[in-house]
Length: 223
Image (cartoon, rainbow, N blue to C red; front, top):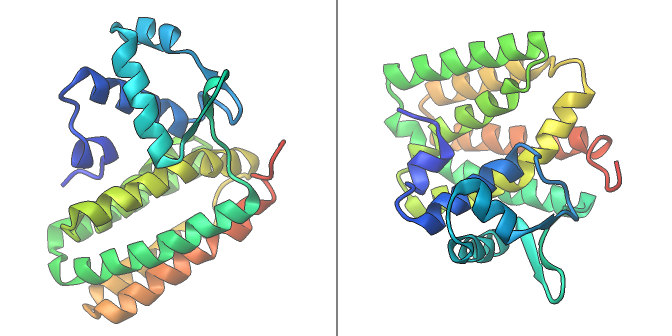
């Protein structure tokens, strides 16, 4: 099972979709910073398409909260205040708590093996200082919430991950490595192994809601 956000939710089948996924990925990895203006002509040339699909992609990104469409300025990359970061994680905790509740009865030996592999990759990336840690972390969570098999829920969780990922990368770049990550995520796996949906939901919510306080020091506006 793949933990990929793009392929699990939005297969690229049109020029607009291609532009949307291209820009979404660029925003996730922090290629564009809050306040940056996105020029449709430049992006269209880069991807190899006309401006119209790019402009349509801007509208979708605006609906996701990733950019703002402003009169006379066009499309501008959005940023989150500290309060908005906290709110995003509060929403994530509720939605991913529901997802893990739905996923718990569907866990299999193969899924647990995949989660163990991703946890190993996270640990190796953390030890080496590689930014792949954030990608593996997202994949770990995606494996679980995709098991909910609730398309709308998956889309909403995915959009929240995309919004917060640049801040996760800033945090990761500012710390030596997430020392407690293995223990925290192993606790999640153990909760899933318990087979108790309510327990797994509570552990997931606690795991997510503890994160904003870690990000606050490094993701403050103007940093």
